[in-house]
Length: 278
Image (spheres, rainbow, N blue to C red):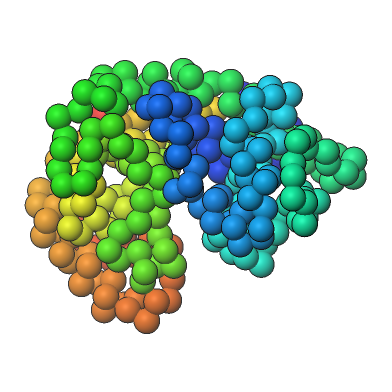
């Protein structure tokens, strides 16, 4: 899918991720999925609950892209309350939202982004099938602790997240970490993509999510790449201990750094050579 000039890629990425979350939740019959999202916290912070509810529950096809962009904007407020999308400011103070009317000047700026979200959103059903082609959400044999076979974790945090500005993984389901992207590159998979997922896997120091697979979801390309962690680590428990020690030693003062930068510091003796399969 090609994009128009002026497309806001970070917003498109977050918006499409919300589209996938909603689709998965609908498949699971989870009607409360949105109350665990970062967009919900952003809506509470700005007192935009009516807008949030409308974006989640409305079925008007003509405004689906705008609603997804608004959810993405609300999540950004949670991550950085100083960045408030101009679209959100149009609804502050409104007690009821029955439709979304956007000022023409603001809308003109966001049209390329709305169009891109709309185009990529059409691929979500196919993306869902690619992600869960080999196993159903409801037939997983995993059942460790509170992590049940029909549960999906949105914005999953880890024991060490507090030291890393609240680092969170977009989606974890059945032991698989999903990294949802909308890259427009012809070859979208990058080494940085790999390192970020590896870092999230290592942040799960107490194996809370029983992670066994890393997955990269390239929605624009309708492509999903999966890789089992047992092919990457000879001793993941030991590597996690080293990773935790490094973070506590270097970042215990809560100064945040990019996860991929931290991963470069790991000892390589516990990381297997990557297979050409990836």
